[in-house]
Every structure is written in C-alpha cells, then in structure tokens.
Image 1 (cartoon, one colour):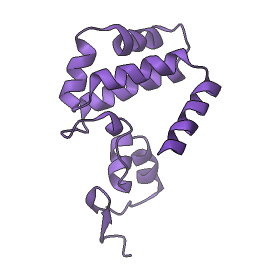
Image 2 (cartoon, one colour):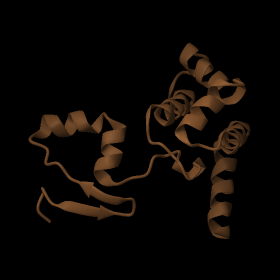
Image 3 (cartoon, helix red, strand yellow):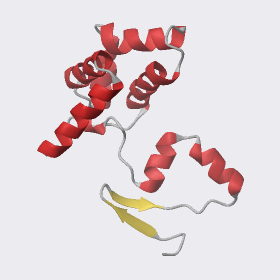
Length: 133
C-alpha cells in the first residue's frame, strides 16, 4: 500500500499521513490519541462506553487518572488525587464520564474490583471471563 493511501479499519476509514522523519515519528508516539487514530485502535475505555462514546479530553483525563494510580508512587499527591477522583468523587467523575459517553457506574465498579484484587487474582478473573466468551 502506498504511504499516502487510505486504509480501512474496523472503525472506518483512516487517512495515513506519511511521517517525514524519525523526529516526527518520535513526537507522534508521545501523543496517544494521534497514535490510536493513526493505527485505528479503539480508546482503552471504549468498552465501558455507551453508544455515544466521545474520544476526547474527558475520556483522556479519566484514562490519565487510571494511569496515575498505576504508574505514580502509591502515596504521591498525584496518585491519591487520581484515586479520589476515580473512586470517591460524587460529581466530577460522573460528569467526566457523561461527557465522554462512558457508563460511570460500570467503570467505577470495575475500578473498585481492580483495587480489591491482587494482580494474580485479576489475571485469573480475566482468563475466566475470556473462556466464557
């Protein structure tokens, strides 16, 4: 396929822009939304979405908070703030979910389950779910 041709993906048509050089590729790799769109990948939270999912700033903010609970130091302000937003906030979380077209109750229930289980227990649960279909 020519680098300037369209590519059909499960989500529809995607225009591939050629990257001019290695610097462009490196810069594009830091922007997760651009990378997802370029390669036709769904947003990681789209499985918690309603029919009107919006891959935008609210979905990206929720995803960033999830990442902060995983990658930041456990007692850091960033990690603690992300946990509060995801698991305890009564309005902000559901507002962001609503704006992104995400089922906030379903996502929060999943996040609480993840918090309660050890990594091994989570792996077992996911394997079990995959076997069921």
